[in-house]
Length: 476
Length: 137
Image (cartoon, rainbow over all chains, first blue to last red; front, side):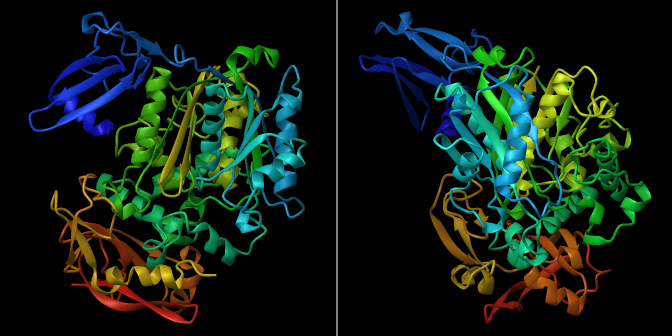
């Protein structure tokens, strides 16, 4: 409906009809007509009316609201709505963040890992926080090998002393954590709860390598992609090969991403692999799915992370330096790569980031640093392009020129990224937010990893080969 | 534990054996594998089943090595070494993923012309799964 209506509005003359029941909008087109009936206090989503009918209103308005409807068309009064204002929606802040160490921990299960992250989060709240204030917890998780597939969010919540809250497991494959954050943001925005946890946890090393491949390879299009004999390495390799063919991206460019992220991860005490690698070693590592080799792939990881999201109005009760949610967006896409019009673009990333940029009122140029989803090295190159940090096809040059290094003009994955920090699936998105919270407050554990003077950061979390994408923009 | 269960596989036999696609009666585009709503116009569910030629061009491919093969394909990788998997753009328009068989790895390339044959995919849960694979045309 919105798309059809948008198209109709662009091509047609729009008229109003004011009825007693409210306001009706009728868009006439020669062969068809679309009708959209609005209540008297209706909120008209961005893009419907704004484009054609109310150009005099600020382009920054996120919605248009009918403020007075006297029944007379000429007297109809409409007002722009800026951000969350006017919709009676709350502004949202992050006032604490915690992360467990990422790695291989046979002695810890999902409960213990989540508790480690939760305790770290509670301790990070400068002025302290009474856990009784927590009203909800959204926990990203892919199912931890199927050992606690049901009710896992209630389990980890009660384990950390939060037995009677609103809690939900959020699952969108590797983007589960990113979507947990957005669920928490929407909860606080709506006014349902004023202090909410967005967490994530995954236990990946309890299962054998064989079972892991059974479990992990089924977030793509299982019927066709899996039965062709691929896992995610193979799927991302298909994208990488086409990218190389179409744009001249070199195999070395892929390895440069791994080298950079290991260099950053070596400075992260919570990373799984805290060691640097040479370009030569990365290039010569054993092939997994040509053109991807071992050092192009992230590992399997145990870990948890948690951020404390609250109503911005009460943020100062917890800290004098909160981080604010400036914008967010998500988008799904066709699961199978073969179903997408473009092989070398993650359309979900483009659309999710467009929504987040629009809400924050800025573009890629307004971002000081980013944590992006580098499950495979090609994924980071795609992110440079699809988030708008560089033109399509130019990501190879972007990494080669050092622009995404910590001292570059767009530092990417200062944490070490999924590649070096680790990828405990459900925790990855919230772990990115943990890093960004500390980067923006200048509190990362080692100053060698600190991006100096960063004010605005973007976090980007991808599920599968792009079937789901979540983007948030945070600002100090 | 299987990835593609027997009923799940059985439901897709028309695609796997005969490459039955859907021609959209509204926009004329061909969907393969099937969709509920046409992925090209996003407006119609009115389809006519058509058998595809199985001929097409390699759009991109990967060589799946030992570490990249799913468990149910490990046996194939051990017996025959790395195997190519491609996304092929079919003559009728849609792209689809599948293995390339009977090809010298050096011969496989983007732009290569392929056709389709019915082959054994693997044996799981005691049932041999057959499906299309691409071969050099």
